[in-house]
Amino acid sequence: MKKIVLLVSCMLIGSLAIAQSKYEKGMEKAFSLLKEKKTVEAANVFERISAATPTEWLPSYHAARINVMLGFAIKDKSKLAQQLEKAQAQIDHATSISPNNPEIMILQAMLYTVWVAYDGATYGMQYAPKVSEIYAKAYALDKNNPRVVLTKTEWEIGSARYFGKDTAPFCKELERAKTLFETATKKDDFSPNWGKERATQLVEECKN
Image (cartoon, rainbow, N blue to C red; front, side, top):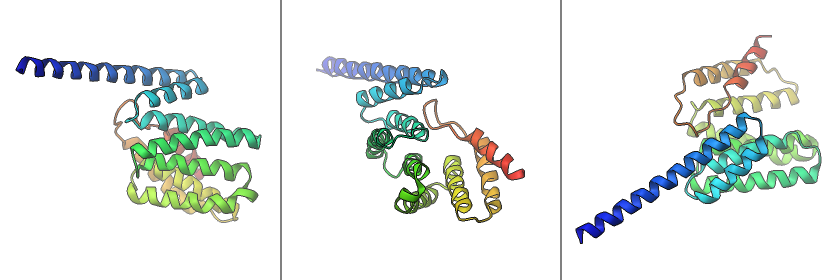
């Protein structure tokens, strides 16, 4: 009986190791495609990984981020709606696995921001309050997350400019975001790790 239990245990451990290896190889392939600027192909790989590993939130997160960012360049409303619908499904899936995750909240705020950027007159009243609310919640959960600080502050700068207000008061928070990026320790190879270059760029703009 002990031999049977040991055999089953070994089989389970072996299966887990194989699954983990496939997950890691798939993620490495997707990131490699990103480096080659093959963003659509990378998003497709992340989607396939997400379907194969339903307990991992990162594949859906990365697929959603790509699709949200691509949305900023789409000018056709119907195509934009399709693009963001896909991204929303991926955000929802990631959230179902990892609720109250500031990293995922950022993507939701960015998705709404795409609509505001596309047509502020039409979508500003609908989505701007939601974006501010999401960033406030994400900040309350993790005020030292560099991406939270960066994206929240950039949104606030954009809002200030829209209403003709001074953006200088936000420069200190951008400096803090830059410092947080410089001192942040990378969790692993697949966790969110973007934003440092953008923070540096915005800090330089503040100096001018």
